Image (cartoon, rainbow over all chains, first blue to last red; front, side, top):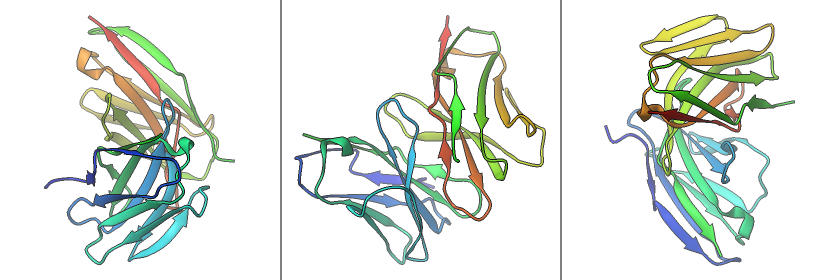
Length: 110
Length: 111
């Protein structure tokens, strides 16, 4: 079992660009959540996908969007990148009550 | 409102016990979790406790929950240098699907 895998591991983008981050959930998990972790902070909930629909959303602007595919993998898209979007983006998969996290994608916006 | 608070730093000597504390504000929390994060890595689930429990023990880890005071603690027995990391507590509530994390406690274990 490969666990939760995310790609890429690191990414550098220019302000104003768009970025897509990818996540493959743990085998048997049908729910994917995305979190943003700024330096020195705890993770903040962005949104969660279940059955290819966004089930719940945190306090993030519409520039943050996502998608879930029939195989449960997921993408996080961020448009019009700001310097403040620089963070570690974590994907978590779950089936019931326990979420397992990937290693994250470190996004740097310059 | 939603708020989870933790002390920022803890330093202990190798072989001693570590106690990391967390307070939360939402009494309707269903599950409470402890995660470990090593430098440059994701979050590793250490243990979790259901809100109708007072204590849970898992090898070197003991979780205590005081629902009246909304206080959660993680005790690590015989702390090792490999336990040096940031520890996050998190809560989730029935009917919602998001975790609310604390700001993390950085544990430093001195040899």
